[in-house]
View 1 (cartoon, protein in one colour):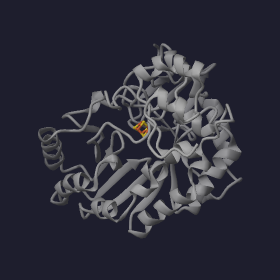
View 2 (view 1 turned 90 degrees about the vertical axis):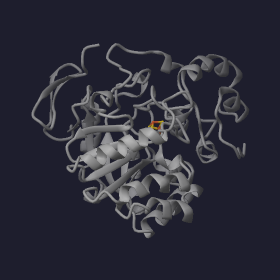
View 3 (view 1 turned 60 degrees about the vertical axis):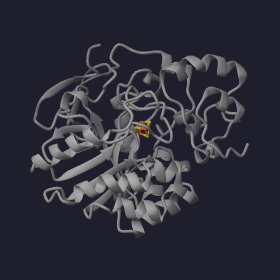
Length: 350
Ligand code: SF4
């Protein structure tokens, strides 16, 4: 079916042929709890005849999302613990997250902020909140990098994005502006001239961290959208999540990393899935993840190697779990060191 409009409800999933009538009845309870959205580009990528389609698995809701395990938590990476003012997360000294918007063009079923994003989520920062966020950045001269995330910041109109970015232009100590987004892959036509000039409105060095998890997401249209960004002088890096049933296979992961490099996107982070509610069907153990990452070494160019990381639950920051920041202390249980040298048991007790 050639879907031309976004799919945003279980009824629309059924009409698009992505779920059958019985599944639709069961999925209403999931859709009441977590937002649903797929763009036409994503719908076209799904093979409805394949019950294990890795694109469908990322975006089509599953009744398994109603199962919440004791170690899962609403704020798995501890954003709230590091939020000094609305819209800002200040976890590391030299950089902040600016969460200007809490909606996305697609809703990933494994999203680490699934309790905050969506039409019922925290919405878009209003003028007063944005003023407070910029005042915070202005007052903290140690902030070298501002990371626009959310939600997906590139869902904003170019005019709105430009208004936000012009505020950063006058803050001298901010040198880097980074955007975390799925838009070049899920809505590639949105990367047009108006958006490109808006992205550069701060006058700072711009990075875009592109989120994609399967090589099929790097379509010709997505690659062309990335090329427009790179040709406009924007540096692209990748972010992927290691997901059971999507990319937990060295061949698939190698193809994904090679597709990034061919597209001039430098592989950056491979995230161990976070302890978001209702996502245990996506999680593998750290030992399984390490084996997959190890299988990439030697198999593909050094240019294609991502860093395998865990966001330590509770807000303690990222740990390189492909390296020496982790050690097994029991069956499925690990001790992970944070960047300050603190030790944390993973998974934490529920
Ligand atoms: S695009 Fe990012 S913030 Fe939005 S649902 Fe997916 S993982 Fe969550």
